Image (tube, rainbow, N blue to C red):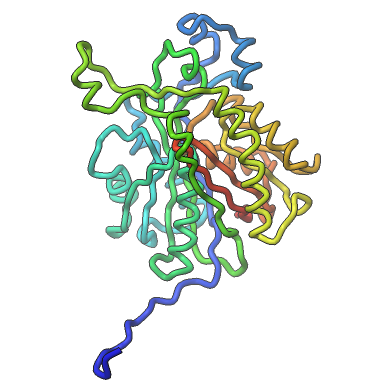
Length: 337
């Protein structure tokens, strides 16, 4: 270093970060299996056996990615007792905001009434919310932000074909949000995250926009999924990731109160619980039964329901884990606010 050079000033963040509040928005329209079975030549019994899903929420024209996010974030801010003007950053996880740019987060930050908070979207599919929690924790502890709003939101009905037997009964809409801020004690554990790009094609957009526009009858590209292969990968690979998240937090399954996996499929959740040898005392999120698979929104929606129903209480220890297209995944242990 040159004798004349002056060291940079480094912002000091909080010693620990935690989730301060959770919020959710579920579209008003509830669609039972009976409304979709004819289009995919299926039955209510088959769908429930295959996935556990009985109903799902589907957004109407007024329930946009932005409006659902704002509603969920306002609930989270109220639960956290944090004013929107105290928010320094808004992180939005989504794959269904159909405007390429600007990000949904910038519009959401404005609608919330933040004081020109930093705002950006991340694309990690179903794992996006857990990625956002990891980023928010690092921002708070690193000094770049004091309060961060993390949102998982999807309008998957826009990019799901109603006649695709492999996806039409699975995907749904909604938004969940969390406020992350300083904590007196460690309340967000180290993230275990990664991706398995060798499995890139298992869940994907059917074609890119150029091919879709060039088609004889252009339409929005839809999601496609090789469900059996995703099931095999997630049911067994993710149990190992879950154990790594516990190890990094210095805990065992016996320390857990709640398990909040991505609401992909009840059979995957059951397989993970068996592989992890979860004690019967651990309460498991089953939001998929009534809400379907909402991708990036599924973990916060499931967590909010557990809190609302009394299955997760303040101070409880919960393991969050999610996985999706890419194949991207992330997991961390958190303390319930």
